[in-house]
Image (cartoon, rainbow, N blue to C red; front, top):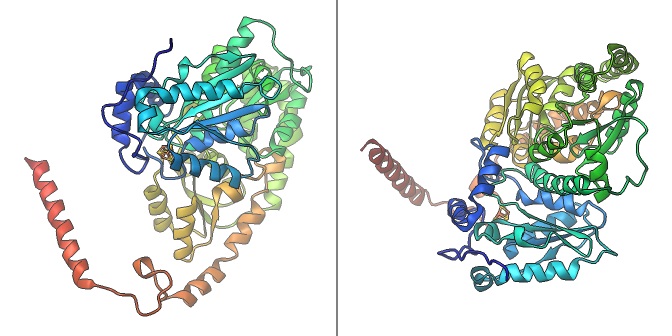
Length: 503
Ligand code: SF4
């Protein structure tokens, strides 16, 4: 006999991230998920940006699962959410099936959905094909308390990982990656504690390793490995990992490096395994010098070994930075979690960066970067909302705006050259000598487009904008009298709300 989820008082299956987040959160709390939501609030503290302004957060954890070999992924959520998530996954080349357990109001409230998920997991758990099956509750099943923790922990040797990734609890897709990475590390840690586990496919490193937290450009871990060699260290696996046995190797590291600073749950697992954690990353001259010396301290290495690595690489970094300078003012915003690192590199390349906005929260692991940037006069905004990013860009009117899609769109409307952070900036090497100067080409080319942007803007001046944008066969059917009437209604409503506040 298995416990079944508590039926919510009112149907939730029509709600989404565009409506009813508070109701879903209240329902999730009533359905026994209060502790989990409190843990999310501690791990991913919310600021002004407390609801998705970008893609569904669950995309982060979905992508982490889909990129792992021999791991099956099952979603449980509203069909529209699952459609969007699978669409984006395949857009980004997932080349894997995403399992889906559909539901309706009846299966949700009677607990049949949980039974359906359990059946799906039993059908999928074939040890010849999979090491693990990841089941993810999206918003509605989380709000209804569908109890994934009651799934079997393992079926025929296939590990079963159940996670809740609600948009009303996990603010960004970056942090959703941490939810799954943390859950997998926790599972792997209990396996390590219980007895011998598989060695990594590439064999055990002969030197102490540094596990690297955060998805990065494929050449970056190799570059980091080269910088670690003079210190007698090796680069360990990158977390999120690509296969299950890498999790054991990651936990077996000497130090974990939080290259991306938002992996709160994963870091907790490293700390529980007794591994020290350092923040920031080897970006640019100052960043690399500080990171190598923090690593030396964490390992308790003699100063000469740290100096050997610094002497081997810092001159090359300085040379690469000065060979490819960036001249111009850049505003920077994104939701990948690596924004502060990119800003450091831009500044060391010669750019003026007055503003950096990140959708992620402030954590101890980005403190060295925040302090360095603020010392250079940069305004760093954590949990930056789209409004923060737009206001900064509009006030500064930079030579280049690097940002999310809506920021780029607004910049182009204003005739400001712009680049997408996710596709064009975060998909480049950033670490060590390979990262120094890697941004210059794309950034300088974009800044060089300023005149072209101005010409395009002048050319299209007067063509439909805002509510008259689009293709019209005749003149747009403007109704200024309706607009005036509506404006009056809104003003009246605002006055009434203000009066109510004062009572
Ligand atoms: S699962 Fe994602 S898309 Fe669906 S309601 Fe939640 S946040 Fe929105």
